[in-house]
Image 1 (tube, rainbow, N blue to C red):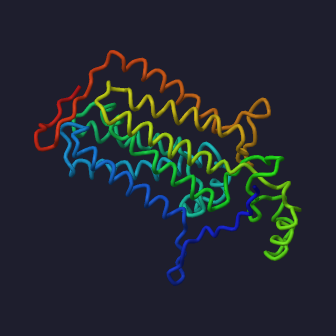
Image 2 (image 1 turned 30 degrees about the vertical axis):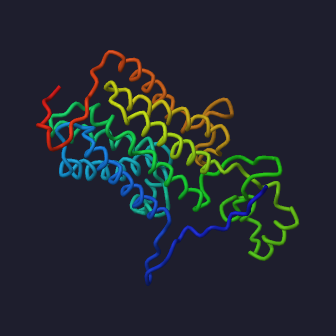
Length: 299
C-alpha cells in the first residue's frame, strides 16, 4: 500500500511560538532516559551511585547529546552552509543533528562524570547504553513527521510519498486538492519511497531497546552492554543506509552506494566486536542497591 505523507512538523503553537514535534521528541527522549535510568539506579546497576548522582549524569549527558549532535552534524555533513550562515547553528528546530556527534558528546560527558565520581568509564557506559534506544526511536519518528531523511523510491506498489520534501514533487507546486486527486488516481505511485525513518525507529528504537534492556537485566561482564549497543547500532544504521537517500550536499562517497552514515557506523561495528571480545575476561559488576552502596573506588 502507498501512503501520502501529510503530517505537520508543528505540533501546536502558543502565540507566535511554534512547538515542533522534533523538540517534543527530544523532551520525551530525555524523560524516557531519566525514567529508565532511575529504575536502573534503584536496582543497583551502578554501585555507589544514588538518584542525586544520576541527576548530575543526566544533565551532563543532555548537554553532550545536544552540543555533540549539533556540532557533529555541522562538521560531518554540512560545514560550508554553517560557515556561510553561522546563526543556523542555533536553529535546532530545523533539524540537523548527528547521532555519531551526539554519541561523542555523551562519551565525553560520561568520562567527565565518571572521573568526578571515581567510577570506571565503561561501568558508566554499560549503565547508560539501555537508556539510549528509546530516544533514538523517538528521534526517527520525528524525522518521519518532518518528512526528512527518507529512502529511495521503492519502484513497487508500496511506500510513502513525501510531497512537501521530495524535490520531484514539490517543484510541481501542486495544491493539496491536486495532490489528493493524483494520489487517488495512482498518478503519484512512482514517487513512493522507503520510509527509512520508520525502519530505523524499529531497529534502533524498538529492537535495540528490547535486546539491551533484557540483556542488561542480569549482571554482565564489563564492556558487554556497551559492546552490544555499538554493534547493534552500527549494523542497523549500515543496513538502513542501503535504502536511504544520502544527504544531498554529500551524495554517495564511493562505489555509488557508500554513504557518510555507513562510514561513521563501521567504527562502531568494530568497537562493538572488540568490546564484546574484551568483556570475556572482564569483571562482572554485581548490583548493589543505593542504600547499601559505598562510593566506588577508582579502577
